[in-house]
Length: 154
Image (cartoon, rainbow, N blue to C red):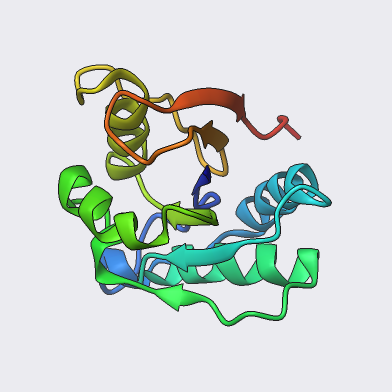
């Protein structure tokens, strides 16, 4: 299984609610860099947090890669989601390739759980950081970190 983790791009600092914060122009550029890393190497499904900045990030990636599938918006990828619960929800997709678009602290904690088997060593996910985890089986502590890239400063 290949599991890609992508933190949303830089978002505006204020909005009516955290869920409504949109990507900045800088954030869109960060996401385009991440999409370039995925080009030619990703053919799976995209799951995204329902928050606006994650939806915008996922749509930019889908469009950049020319993927035909609709984005799957799921409530278990928000900043405060429980990585263990999300892992249970992902089990039914464990035979494919998935891109999760989410937020900190969740996305780093999920990556740390999958690689190290615990949440005390989260992956360092900056805005638009992209990680690839691989294993025969989707399980805590059994996945290998194959790639971790951060957007270049502009």
